[in-house]
Image (cartoon, rainbow, N blue to C red; front, side, top):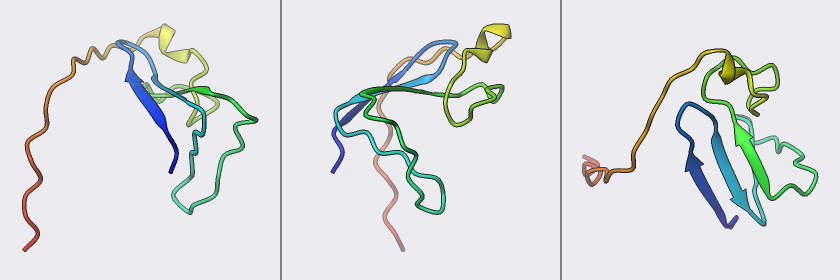
Length: 77
């Protein structure tokens, strides 16, 4: 299983760091990351290289996030 860390950057992308990052599309096709151990994913929706960040958020995107605990999931009925 891939070992990665995800960092939510205020007013910017989701940053993934790890030795074995695997990113797939909804059909399970794997993006070739060419051995990268650091990848930034677009959150603003403006990137021309989605799902990857190309810095387009600098033209105007605001989203500040602080870590918090999610409640436990509801039991399946």
